[in-house]
Image (cartoon, rainbow, N blue to C red; front, side):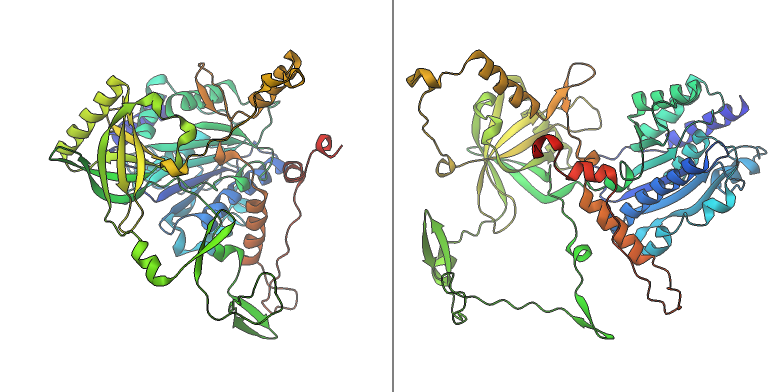
Length: 530
């Protein structure tokens, strides 16, 4: 079709402009696309807007300072997007109509309060058009391709997907998928229709194609508590711990490397959970914290003024004065020295401590890339893992680590090592248990062994995937978090509270009650209570 041809031309042009970055940027650009078309019922339309607004709210409340958000509506009676204007200038004014950009892509910090209310009026005034989600997806992708700053890209489309899209051919879909892959753009398709309301066949084919070839996620959301308000709480940012050199002991070889954190702990911002001021009558005063120290066995006694640090050794406390502590403290510069190799089976996963790191060669040093790649592939070929002594930052304590080789099969992903912290001899503990064979009454029966096996298997965090490979059973981005949902609802209500009836401008926010789904998640089950 004509529309498909123009889409194809646009997709090919966009694909040529893309460059795949070696490492993902820390900031994220998100385009939230909501359906307001005429095929939606009133209830479904409101649910689409609630979910889309919840996704926006989460990004505003928990996104980084450099994250950007754009909002697009499709199925509108108005048209307003750059892609349509470009096509109209070329004589194709019937392309990408009924798609409206209600909030241009810009950083969250420039107008957070506007984003919290972006869908309150716009959607109600312009719904009832007939554009499809493919038009909206390409408009959103066009917005991301024109973003001058590097960022991780994502498009979230919320709809019932009941309106059949125009016919598209496989070649055009290939161009669309190629553009999404080249831009490393994640796509989330969120349907408010239940399993009993499948989308039209042409929609289902395109959605499955995007899922299969572009890694898009296709989800069904019963309400915003099930989906948007409980997601977007895990932020994946490549956190560089700095550049250093991998020194090979006994050799005058130093390979420039960059150390990245593989996993970082995420927590709610303290500034969101507590305020630094309190209301004293009509005046706000700062909150000051005062700490007093008393004896544990005499809590009503005098306040202790002179204190000294002490460290536990068993049940005893060993006092260490400041001078001794300064003398004992090791101050080393960051470094990494390869001590040798051992068989990879010598490092069971249960012995790893602390956090994992990714060791990659310096991005601008071809010699370092070749040297580290050779080391990685040689270790993988021999079934060996490196043993290193490393200091992550200046002044940190030295640690012992295992370098597990990770050769890459992708042309844009470098070979690397996974650095896992190992225990020292003092960290190992051996516990002695009596043998179960020492008494007949302790020998488990076949039924007891079967029950124990079922309990252990039910607690496994892995399950068999579609192709037989093991995959994670619990995906942290999709685990419901009631505290996040409640905090979202309260903060949004607080930030966008309207004037009260007397017009004093003191809008009040109430903590919303948890929905039935959240109560089912957070409260113990009847089986446990019985």
